[in-house]
Length: 220
Picture 1 (cartoon, rainbow, N blue to C red):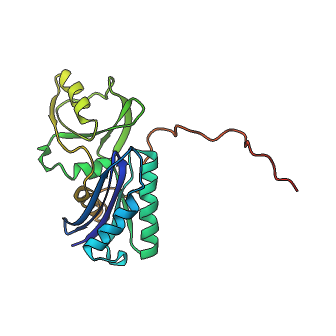
Picture 2 (picture 1 turned 90 degrees about the vertical axis):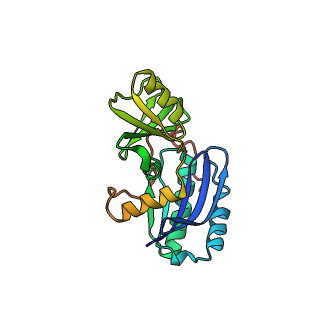
Picture 3 (picture 1 turned 180 degrees about the vertical axis):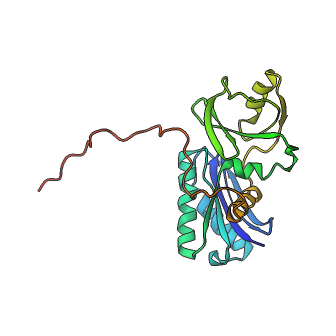
């Protein structure tokens, strides 16, 4: 039995929801520009109101850690940690792959890859909590039966099928609130490895700090 608030802005949409015992009590979702988190605070307020629950009554806040948008990940995490700190509620981070895998009960024993666009001409491939970025035309070697999910699943599945791999293309493109909550429950129960609720970055930042501080020293 658990009541969990879920927040997600890792990919090309954001969502907030209240999940009680695996069922959606209230939810809001918005397609938006990659990395945009402006709608999320209002969505959070709406779902708590619709669910008639105060933040302190939550059992946990589940939030996606990545891989995905640098800005989206940080925005959702900042909101989750701010609310959690004020309400005294634990923040539980889950990866995009962990949340999506929780929505794939029909994987039928196949090896699951969650493939996500990384906006730099490559794809993030997540398997069993391990993530790496790969060129789309140079995917990691694999054998056996595969199930592919994530917003880059169609392109990755086509590449694998062309190599003769037995591929099941799924229709789970993004984390869902139920998947996020389910993965958060698994993490809290110790059935997923411990992971800090901090951003999961795979690539280095696109912008780096200058080697020398360009600011002028203060004038006395």
